[in-house]
Image 1: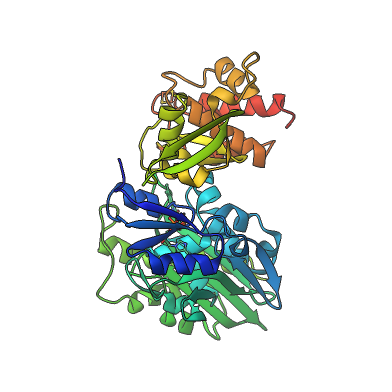
Image 2 (image 1 turned 90 degrees about the horizontal axis):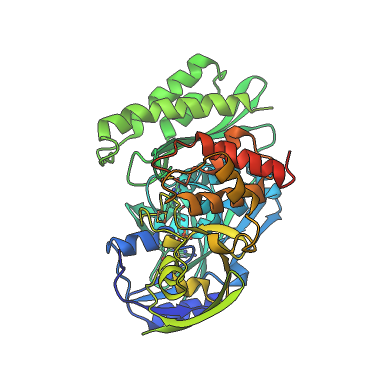
Length: 288
Length: 157
Ligand SMILES: Cc1cc2nc3c(=O)[nH]c(=O)nc-3n(C[C@H](O)[C@H](O)[C@H](O)COP(=O)(O)OP(=O)(O)OC[C@H]3O[C@@H](n4cnc5c(N)ncnc54)[C@H](O)[C@@H]3O)c2cc1C
Ligand code: FES
Ligand code: FES
């Protein structure tokens, strides 16, 4: 399968990438290429120009900051999954990155590309939404920050403006003593998630003091489940409490539940609470 | 508009002018003439196009040649010195880890990637490490045994 003709521009810095995007009408950013190249082969995407950001040094690397981890947009899934600072402070993200695709996909795919592609079933947006991450972006107008929950605006659509580059993902550390888990229902061939659920639980004196629950692959973008979180708050985190919280997620699904050849919308709605429950049980087991 | 590229494949330098849309696997097979690397699915799922790019296992049907400009690549043809088989090649032979052989170059490069990150994998870890590679005839069991044998020979336990 051959992609359409295109032109190629390699950016040496973020400012050069922004300039190249502004100068080339119909240009698209190329990072690891593991979402864009498949789309180009299918001609679902035919960018007139490619701006390759893959060699920009300032977009690489993972650093611990005060109570958070800052992950350069070009950090690969493999780098994130094997990073000590990520495993110590945000184990939920390390777990999800380690479950993306297969080893070769994890060696090329980047966090910036994964969230910018805004596939509703992608693993990272789901956990980053659960973790209240924020994204730093740079464009012709300067820098700004977008919350993970506000970043995807629809199926494969984001709040990124024209000519903006996502530079860094900032993730607050999980609270001490909390437990977290990400479980996914993988497509058997591609390992892509059909749907996935993330949970972070914290308890104080035997009662749940904070709960974060996010689900991806059911609606056009990953979202928190306010109903499940409300059901968990103050509960004793018993099996019954987790059952009730998992059942509550259905109340948050709107009319726009996804459907494709792999899973009907009824099936996704049925599997949503099942996977949320599994994530909650696993997160509870990891608390302490 | 064509773009000049140069890269080292199996220790030999190659240069050319390529269309930006050209996939790395096509450069390797058609420009460098190294047809050991296969195109199975062309949709990033089967792993038969796996090569080592700057030391890391990647699917060459899901990279553009221009992205690999200046890189060093190893394909199945360059895994051994041309005299002795690489321990993985030898183990696939010993353990009957192939039938038609179509998936084998990618399978061996993916196995090499696994042993790079985990020199002593358990059988379960071998199965997970080869998750991105599909074989349509051998049935995986002998492939797992071959990787296990090679790991032992290469210094893992
Ligand atoms: C076989 C296979 C299996 C996969 N399985 C999974 C899976 O299980 N779970 C999962 O979550 N994902 C999966 N993926 C997708 C994978 O994670 C992609 O690598 C990732 O979604 C895209 O990252 P990339 O660096 O390759 O981005 P690219 O493909 O280079 O870019 C993707 C999109 O984001 C834009 N973009 C890239 N970087 C930036 C940036 N810094 N700023 C602004 N825009 C940017 C591009 O213009 C493009 O539109 C799979 C992919 C394949 C091929
Ligand atoms: S041909 Fe590249 S993964 Fe199948
Ligand atoms: S040996 Fe024939 S596909 Fe694997």
